[in-house]
Length: 474
Image (cartoon, rainbow, N blue to C red; front, top):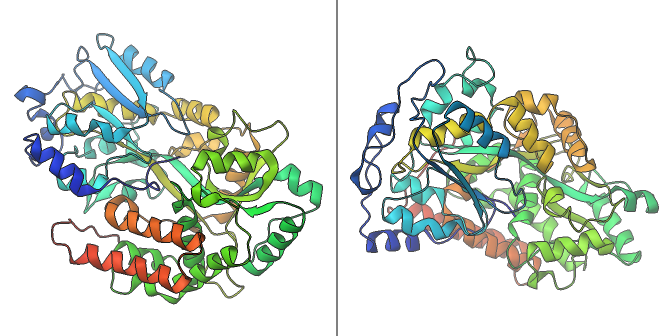
């Protein structure tokens, strides 16, 4: 289970806890100048001499603490640790994986956060809250630093399109989303071959396939109502964007009046409603968590699972040999859609952040710089089966799994026809409300019209709340 798409904790809870602990939210000023502000306990942050070999001015003797998310991708970046230690031999590097990132709140409140955090999972800290509280460093110096592979090429020029936009808040780059997540309809190629099935490109044809799968004794579509209904939200919004064009999602992100009431969103909600109405969803899914529902899928009890490219690695320990997990784009609602059938949701995710009050801000950015080296990014993909935002690594890596192979093929077929949304990163309460509305839609507790109404009400509430900082997507 991953980062931006999970249900965020309530932003007001974080603010209350931070204020109760006496935290002062101080702005980060400047670029590298910001790295010289006070760290925990009022001590000056670690700073070394800037040179060609040390472009970020890292103190090579300063300890570095990194927190990774021990979810579906599960890695502590051993290659990156080795590279960092080689460049900064006097540094003690500690990398720890954890699931409950939200448990780091007290450390933010006491001005003693880790130096680098993978803020992901169901228990992440809402990025909008951290940005609004001036708790995150400006990562512009990282973007402007020379890349590890070629000192004549800046880091920003090694990244796939959209990486900077997704991690920026009103023009300031606060989060490096390291993994290129590709969403779609995931299924067993061997199961489909056995039944001579093909993944349809149009929704009506997909419903016909669901009828065949149900007749064959399968639950046609799986989901997890307890903690991952938002996977189906991505399916819905992908269909809406294909129907009405990418601006459908931009309007939702920008909290434009009536954005959720756009006809394309309503059409997509009606399509999802059909799955529940026709009995095409996994029985009991409303009470399941994501790994439970996904286990039913890899056991061969479910035909199709809407999910993203992390799922292959997340489920590899229980996936039987010969399952041959693959993905296809979400079906189009009709032949008159604004975008081609090959269009799909692909977006940088897995948000890595450097707290502004960390003791070693420069070291946190330096660790990210080494994560973005081609060989290290390729090692990550080979371990996890997920692509990164490093262009050269994605072009060079040879797929060793069926899931990664199908993901690369889908991206190539889509070309520039990819879509994304960002409101789930910006507005935690709104995302939580819309996720609950999706759970209600899938469980038959809400109609498509009621789903749209609930999401629009959540958006209107967010737009009217002056205490919530607003962000704009161009």
